[in-house]
Structures are given as C-alpha cells and as structure tokens.
Length: 241
Ligand code: SAM
Image (cartoon, rainbow, N blue to C red; front, side):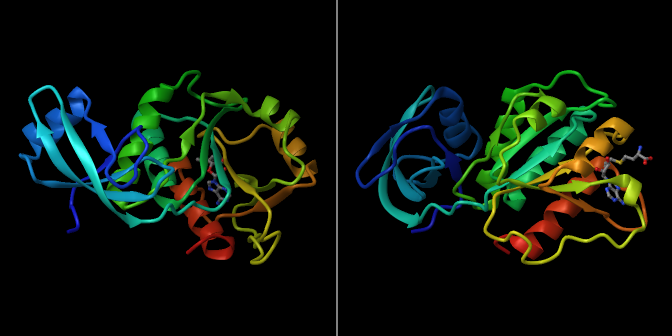
C-alpha cells in the first residue's frame, strides 16, 4: 500500500493513531480528490516521518484517518537558512516554494536598504512551504519567518553559522564556494533585492568573519533565479545531494 495523496497534518503520527480532518482537508480529500472510506493517504507532520493512513470516517465537513504503518523516517534537511529580500508576490512565492523543495531548513525574508516590499504575508508563505513539501515527498517543512531587518539579523548573527553572500558586484569574477569549506557548520545563503545591496551593507557583509563572498556567474540573475542557483551550488558542494 503506497498512497499517492500526501497531506501535512499538525497531529502526532504513530501506529493506530487517529487523525481528525479539518474542514478544508475533508473537502480536498473527499470533494476534490474523490477519496472514500477505505482509501489511503500518506501523512507527515515534520516530526514523525511519513505514515500510510486509511480513511476510517468520511463526511462533508470532516473525517478521520487512521495511521497504519510508517513508510519513511523523518529526513531532516541540512542546517541551511535561506535569507532573501522579498520581491513581487509571485516571485516571492516561487522562492519559498523552491527553497522548501531544495532543502532549506529555514526561510528568512529580510528587509534590506533597497528592498521593494515592506510587508509579507507570513502565513501564506508558510502554506506555500507546506504545499511544496507535500508534493516533493519531503518529510520536513521549513519554517518561514516573519520579515526582519537584515541589519538586525546580522547584529545577532550566530558565531558558528557560515554565510554564502551572493554579491552581484562580483558578477563575472571567479568566486565560487569551495567544496568542503566548513562542511560540518550550519550555513545560510543571502540573496539581495532587485536593487542589489547598498555600499554600506556590502561593506559590512564583506567584513564578516563568517561571510563567503560568491559570484553566480557572468550575468546578473533575477533574485528568484539567484536563489535557486545559489541553493543548487550549496547543495552540490556541502549539502545532501
Ligand atoms: N540591481 C543589481 C545590479 O544591477 O547589480 C542586481 C540585483 S540581482 C537582480 C538580485 C540579487 O541576486 C543580488 O543582490 C544577488 O544576491 C543575486 N545575484 C544575481 N546575480 C548575481 C551574480 N552574478 N553573482 C552574485 N549574486 C548575484
């Protein structure tokens, strides 16, 4: 038995455990996906791995799933944060979705001097991360944090966390992430806004002991492309690919 439908639930999972369905989940399973009593669904909650569950109650406004057997253990991503400056809505959604698929442990929208967007809808972005984990087979959902100022985040930057600083000023320079650099350390990737980093920010970042300044090639990439490219490079050199 291996269910095609995967659902994230905020409920403990274990053999024989019953999981009550919320209204929108019941609507999705029974209304949209046409599932019925006895059908199977894969569940994960970000903690207990993936479980195969059977539909044991089905109604218009709710239902119950019962866990049968674990089908995957919890697989944690590497301890990698993605810091990015929010851009237009659809492109910000894209960054969150791709970061969750590509194995970020935490997603941190940051306000920089040239950031276009002053607000984000954190709950909406978190829902995108959940959907991405549902569809990519992941058993972990990265936390999407509220928007915070980059300068304040750097004020309290953890001493051991290395920072892959993607600096558009280095476009075309051969500055790559060295494989095996601080391979056991926690890491973060920093992607700037459409307007790039200010001189003040660049100076501060270059002076950070934990910063590894990186170029993403001979062309300036849009921030969403840059986020995917940087995560690919990091995963290839230091991650779990
Ligand atoms: N307005 C900036 C300019 O014209 O120089 C470009 C900013 S770019 C659209 C957005 C972000 O993507 C940058 O702040 C940087 O973090 C990253 N990025 C894009 N292309 C890059 C490259 N070739 N090397 C390093 N970082 C890059």
